[in-house]
Image (tube, rainbow, N blue to C red; front, top):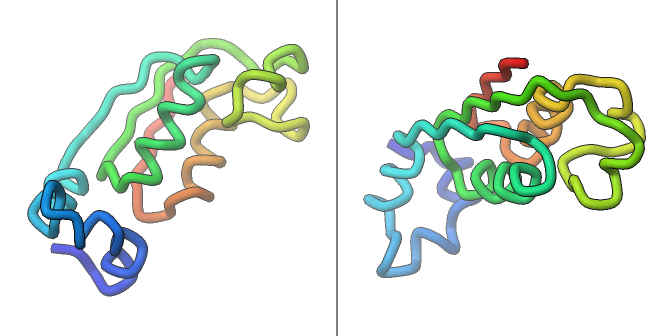
Length: 105
């Protein structure tokens, strides 16, 4: 069941006949494994978190390098040297605090 804050956050989804309350509740119940928080995982992770996927597990053994910043939009200058999974978790939680993020390096 969606709480009041989630109803406000996902309001655009809720008014779409293709999604509606039932669809948003399915997204909230979904669990996703995201392998890689780099060039493809970065935008995917942001969209998955923003859409309201209930639980996202991130798996990536790499650390953020300054050369990643121009294309890996989950990471920023303060993330350099940090494990990508921790940087990704931090940013995805900022995008949507209702999503549970698990991070494994």
